[in-house]
Image 1 (tube, rainbow, N blue to C red):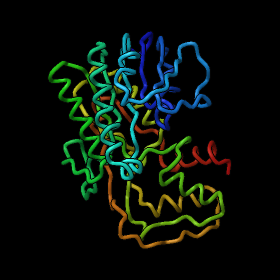
Image 2: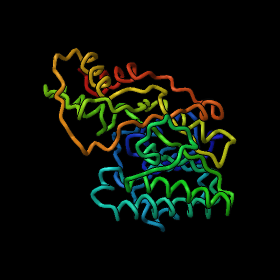
Image 3: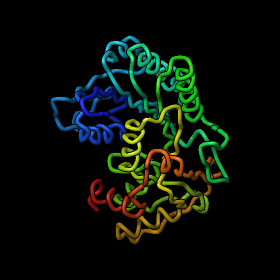
Image 4: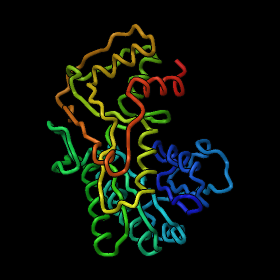
Length: 303
């Protein structure tokens, strides 16, 4: 399906996007367009079929210029959680209006399918292990904007038969990530500073390695499935405390974590099941947390 096609990756210079672009090259598309606000050329090997376009998804006409003849769209461009907290209006304009611009331009250009990167933030804090039918309970602008994007895709499918698949990522990590628990802990270890664990560290999450996320994207695009949403996780529930101690062990560090009280920690548990993706897409997470942490340490930190 992807071989010989023209593919657009919004947010293609970001953490997940740049890994996806590398993964797509193995599928021999005719052209890959990397569309991003900040193009980081050092993330890509020069290729005849790779084109970079600088722009923002809020620029409606810019999108309409690049969308003709595009067969498939991977939509990853997003204002992240922290920036959404600082500037809710920018979150609305980028994550909601910008996503509408992508979907509208794709529909008008005759794009065959969109794979949309959503997030586990749509579920909020949960006691139960979440499947895709779990009630949506976002309590952040970021999570709310992802819900809006999902429902825009559903509306365009019903109105115009624009095919799509939604992927709700759990806690993604891997080389090239700038923030997040794993990277923040490793940075402190490398600086000789004790990792910080808020409260007792019993908060638990589902960590998924970047290579598994890329595989999920490609499986979703190449499948005949449409009008569906899938959780994409690592199928391992891990507490913050256990993750931190695993990093200390793997780096050979003798640092002792520092525990701090913080009543504002928003999440106690967010763990999903990816069984639907396994059944319908053939998705199987292949990188365990321990192996994934080793890969990050070896490639990113050279500890």
